[in-house]
Image (cartoon, rainbow, N blue to C red; front, side, top):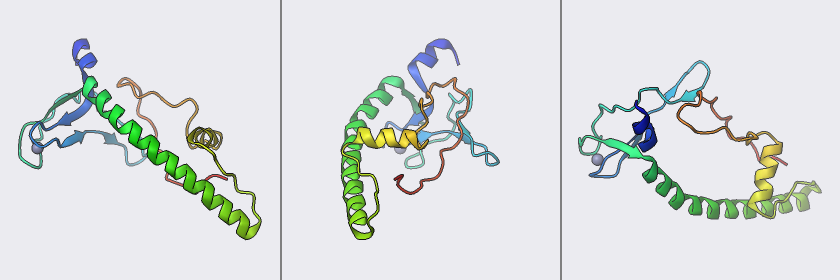
Length: 144
Ligand SMILES: [Zn+2]
């Protein structure tokens, strides 16, 4: 992949212009659970599974705009999740006299997840040249 293409396109991401189907080609080592991006993954020989249209590469700009659109919705969902967690912790504490932690905002929740190690600190970068990252741990119970 030449340097200009690396600046224009996300690695191993493709889209169908006809129906909007997105394809992310990732590799996973079954033995270690490591997930990465195949170097030289700029070619997509697979047609869209919906309409057989040849897919094209996704640009960084498209990826950024999509991320921006979804980030707001994700934050709203996280706020609601934190409210539910706080309410649930309060109810459990009332029930059994426990001291489960209640979080007042997503920032507190995120800090707690960092302390518990469920969010690596610092968060690894997502640059195409980064080595494959280990697969995330499976979801576990709410940290107290
Ligand atoms: Zn399609």
